[in-house]
Image: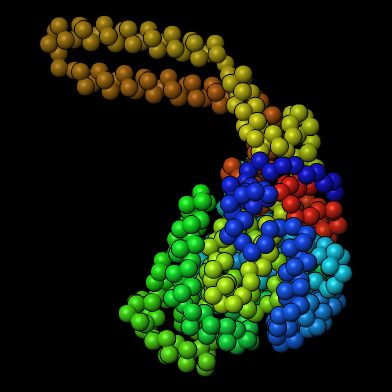
Length: 538
């Protein structure tokens, strides 16, 4: 593998400013992303109290079903002793979801390793699985590249209820068909058979979306000790009981603060990422695996659809007996994370950076300190085939990002058009138009009532000319299909749908090409979290 780092050409303003020394965005965070911040945050955690032994036991219990490898056990023992944690998280997508899920995990592992060395103390990596998310339509599909076109491949089963990923059951036949379809699109390589067998084996032992995601992530990162935890795991919900109480008791104040902070964020030019409202309780009520967003209305926590209407006292009593009835949203998840886990840094993308920017006063209300926010790394993977095409067409990855591959494709198509045939057809059409005009005048003078028939007849000939020109153009393109296909391959591989590949494809597409050690080899590269975009060729 070869690593090249470039200035990222496609970055939201909030990310660009976050990497800037002097920008308004820093006032919305506790720490800047710099070396001294990690020292200060580590000292803060050392002087704070966390239930680390209990947390480690819960994570160990959760991971037992998928297998706890040697490195993970080492990290669990360090967590028991109070080691700080680098955390990142994502929804439980099929085949681990888009590449950025894996990129987050890689960022978490590398940052934990870096800070372990710099702070000279244990720092462990952890991945928080958002199994409580109920938008199954976001996670029930992936994309593949078929003949230089992006194809959406979806899991065929649909749930009538808006159940959470951790309670949405997988149909074994449907998931097997999904996996086989996706790998068929990838094409047969020396690694395909083993990969398919491994993925299907995990699918067969997975009851839910979250189970499947956990099995695959644990397998991919087994040599690196990535700790995994599902937000909905019942023992973890019990562990969170006291923290849910704090969120309930401070609910109105948190909501007002988030609304005000989001207003300030918008005034600073960073938009309103949450659309927060003063009555939003920022907590979901869970019933039979479905989530219903609560709001505060007339002194009660309620949801009309779920027919829930509870006073604060009633909700506190229910949480005392059964904390599984509640689930966090984008506002309360970071707060819960800070109360439950000794977080040195949180790794997230641009969207997460935006909504975290609304939360600093809410952290303060709960007597918490906002941890360091670490923007995840952006990676683009360049296969040997793509590298060869880049060289043949004298392009770089950066130029593809900048739109130059698309420009060259359009210029090439324009250059191969049969201009003579176009001119001949245009002359034929001009002659026909003149004849129709002459005929039209003759019919008008003779008082024939045939104008509409004449128009339809002319329209028919126009369509025939268009059809003829289209067929000529198609044959011209077919003659030059190899070169056109090369340009399309660059676009669909490196910048599919006008965006980074990490938002479209899943990691198994690249493991199918590169091999089973793909993740391990990525983690050997000298990458660090920065404003640079990582270009990886293999």
